[in-house]
Length: 106
Length: 259
Image (cartoon, rainbow over all chains, first blue to last red; front, side, top):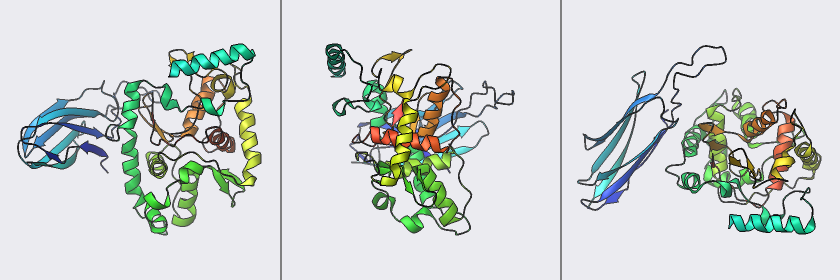
């Protein structure tokens, strides 16, 4: 089960700058650590985070091994129209986790 | 405010010429939250940025999920956790009549799984067990810790106090050596807190995950180079029992964030 917390204001005024917060549960295993049996723990990180606003990509980030577990990303958007904000996290194996939220602009 | 308290404490100790060996006075009792940087405090206070909430969220899903041969969910018996589980974490560990011993919250969840759901117990420190414990404990957030009053707990609580005050390991330190006698001072770069278990299971930035009070206790034992008790050991539950009595009156913070 995807464990993600996203925070989008429910309502905003036209043109208002709103803060978006997104956090996902992920071990962000660097690939540099050595397990109890002496071999490397395989790398398992989220590579890319992207946010789309009514289908159009408005924010994205490439993540690297130095990012902590359970990455928390906060950024701002200009509220233009009512609609959905979708979030996707893509990991090393290509597995995609998603979350979405609605925003009403008036 | 913090500096003032410390000044007052140092002043009092200097006047009396003694170091408190009997524990912490009620007026001086403070949660580990107060010893953290403002940035870490903000991380805990905001539910949207507190990483422990990811476990609470998972716990909420698990609460609704039918398990075991009985095919029943936690919610099947306990219904709405926000009603039925409110205040439960504030009074645990409680006395378990079946085993004749105190049992902590995670232990209760596993015994419920075995008896009611007829499911395999969850492994200690597994995400599922931490998530369910965090979800149940979160329902008591903001309530004062009120230790169980069952008279049968007394011998176990006394044993917990004895363990708290016993010097162990190669460094020959007891819990009390740091957390009663030297709280507020520094050990390496970190402030020594009073060791009140107000927010377990909690998110430790050092661990990069949520962990239980038992994990924390075992960490401290390894720190003084002692052989730690196994997860679920009766001694650890006795210690938990003493710690909740020691912290009585402080507010439940689950899921707390610590550095």
